[in-house]
Image 1: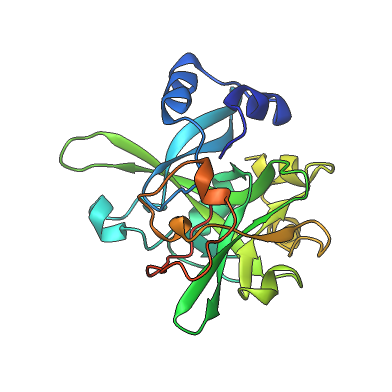
Image 2: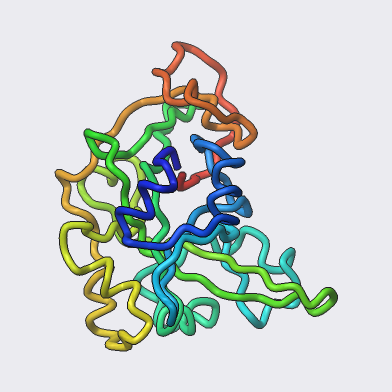
Length: 239
């Protein structure tokens, strides 16, 4: 996420507390977010809308440990989100938005995997539909907040690379407000929001194979690909 946290707060009319602002400033601009790392999440509680830092990879309340959940629940399928034991409670009561400037997918060319950034033409922030959950460590009693991205079938643009994509909520409509509203319990209406984004919203841009290693970070990841550069095994990461 490269968008300034204060700009995110303005976009979503959300409070950004001093603690969260300091933590986001310390993280800085992100170009290669990996599962289990902290991400900014927009949530709506009784006292208002706010931006929080949560772990990417939802840990259900019934998990015995964080390692049990691991990176298993980074994504929630729209088709089963209302019935999945890991996500159904969050679908009804704890929905969130995960802001992102784009996400990566890969195109295999023989033994090589070429990463692509999927983003808008003007790099405008995107609002991924997400779910969050609180989990209490039975040993320490400490609370952990974590989140997952809701995915749906890919539109024509993304399907050139992958058959799934994040659900992207329209910031020009009430879709994102409805999704955030904890009082909204109409499953049919909520499910209707989980559709692929319009084909024209996104474009593909080939980027550096440095993206393939989650330890790499920085603006150089968005440079064009180097011909014949070796490619490491890649994970599909939404960043």
